[in-house]
Image 1 (cartoon, rainbow, N blue to C red):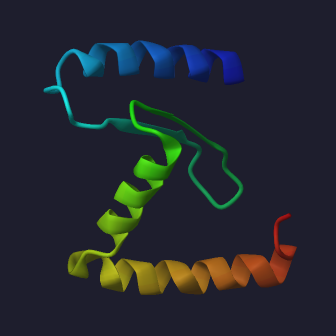
Image 2 (cartoon, helix red, strand yellow; image 1 turned 90 degrees about the vertical axis):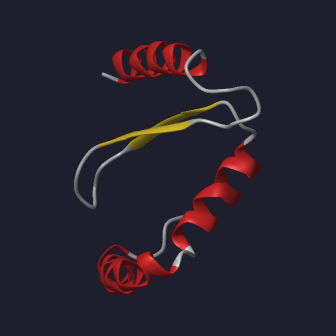
Length: 85
């Protein structure tokens, strides 16, 4: 399964790069639904820039209520499973 997901990510990223003007970053997340899911990503940007862009996205005012809701879910998961190392 992992190889199939990685191959799909590469293919999609290669197609998207040609559609976006130079100087813009692209990040594609592929994930399982649910708390126990896994996630893979592809990006044209260095990891630090990609994480910064995600942080800026979440910091937008329109995401505040969702972040509060997710914080409660994350706190419950940490209590249930313990912190991840």
